[in-house]
Amino acid sequence: LSVTYSDKYEVSTQSVCSEKCSCMKLSSDSNLLAYATRTSVIVIDCNTFKEKCRIDCGGITDIQFSPHSVYVMYWKLAAFNDEGPNVWLHNVETDTSVIQFQHKESFTKESYQWSQSGYTFVRQYRGQLSLVMMAVSHLNTVNMRVPKVRSFSLSPTSKDLYFAAHFAADNAGGASFVKTVSCKEIPDTVDVTSKSFFQGDFMEYFWNFKGDMVLVVNNTESDKTGASYYGRKMLYLLNRKGDAFQISVPSNGPLHHVSWLPDKNEFLIICGNMPSEVHLFNSKGDAIVKLATGVFNCAYFNRFGNLLVLGGFGNLSGAVQTIDM
Image 1 (cartoon, rainbow, N blue to C red):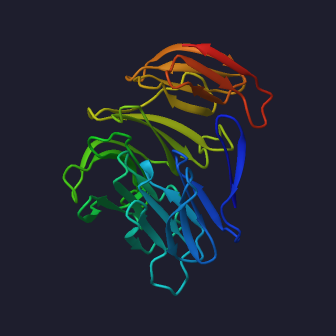
Image 2 (image 1 turned 30 degrees about the vertical axis):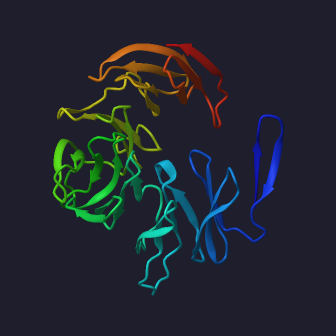
């Protein structure tokens, strides 16, 4: 394992490890590098290439850093008859173990999320949500009373902890729900908004910059109307004021892309059969303007939100178009 870096004048390569590595992860600020060997997990400082901590643990399959890189989390596949932990959380700054637990289900990025502060960690396990709050002097773990959770997404706000979640139906043939939930009174939770529907296989969540509104794309694996072989996508908007409603897509056909404008309460969707249409909506779900028509299936804003790049990628013969917002 080696690291290639550049300074003002040249590009250099530094050898880090001569052993076989099973996985590695660079922190979001590129200051730390964690990698797993056959017997250990090692975290190094990328500025000095000195070892910050070494943890004795073999068979690791993946590594992730928390926001701000205070903690490193690593895990391995759970053995069938092993009741011991297979997920560990370690404080990089103090070189101390924080928490360890068993997670026999597939431990994917959909199974856990960090708050924006980087000191609250939520994981989903067997239809429940477990909240881990880390402070300087103590650790608090709370199992939140939210039964039958199928998926969830934390809001990107650092003030109050909210999440959106998809709840399974209480009985066969019943309605399932998407809700936004407040965690102010844990272990109890308070429903803020709720939207029910009778068909929904998995959800995608898109929060606005402030974290007070979320767009939920309800994906169904099959279309009972026969309009599409690939299923349907329905778009809903939920906010903290208690409003929850479906967004009427202006064009017939699939929903290709959804994204919020940076630091604004307006969002963009790309929809319809090719050539698709690009529409801008306000926070009330009203279409404001049609921005473009073309072979597009994705959109990207710059950090200021004044430039929009539209593209058609994958198996499309698309083009790239830039729009001054």
